[in-house]
Amino acid sequence: MKTEPHFKGWAKPGPVPPGLAAGVTVEPHETLDAISGHFRLFQLRAGHRFSTDDILVAWYGTSWCPTARTALDLGSGLGTVGMICAWRLPGAKFVTIEAQPASVALARKSALYNGLTEHYEIREGDFRTEGILKPEEKFDLITGSPPYFPLGAGVESEHPQKLACRFELLGTIADYCTTAAHHLAAGGFFACVFPYEPAQLARVTAGAREAGLVIVRQRPVVFREGDPPLVGLFGLMRAEDLPEGFREQTWTEPELTIRTRAGKIHPEYSAVKLAIGFPP
Image (cartoon, rainbow, N blue to C red):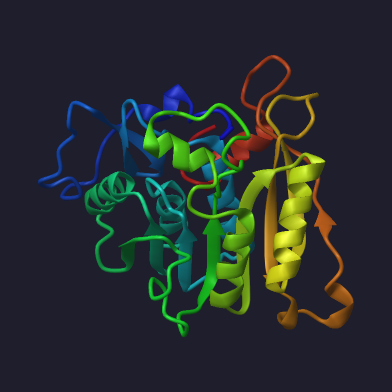
């Protein structure tokens, strides 16, 4: 984990609206992949590749906060989550924050290619660093696809981009919750993805509680029909924005299944793909 990479069928660029790709070229060490509708994403051939987890958190956040006017993506990496959210929320103003220069460069290239220059700001830096976000900056929707594991908890890649995407070099789930709590607008929604097994689920719960957030809903994700859920999608809000009686309640939604037992795309996930601009 991160979980399975994007499907091969999604990598076909297809037609590009006139003018979007002016002056932007694909280098030999890069690929240009379909991500949402007519949007495309630059990735390194041998680096970190976007995963189903990224797709899901963007879909989940925009589904439960469909009228967001301002959005923030923490630890934005290649820009996968931000790009999908921007396609789904074309009138919103976006800020994304990523610490790795290589990922920032790719994200900026993708933003230029997709015509996202006026309302889509990419900031380079650690979102935990003072000044990267002004105290008064507030967002209706915040998203995050944090790394899942502490250093030493698994096999660590020698590729720095892959390493930071899987292991907690640049922030834990608690750090994501703390930053989200500080920058959510009143009534705002924070969507994230994290492993669903008990020990990891406890980390999400603790991080939310310590930050003054409430997990108002969660959805387990099953990657193959009949298997236990590997990750969960979480929707959090500030406790102060909720009626007192709702601050200790979490609604667990039915499992979302990605593939059938036979390995085909499940109808539920086909609906997700349609919602972010792909045919089933």
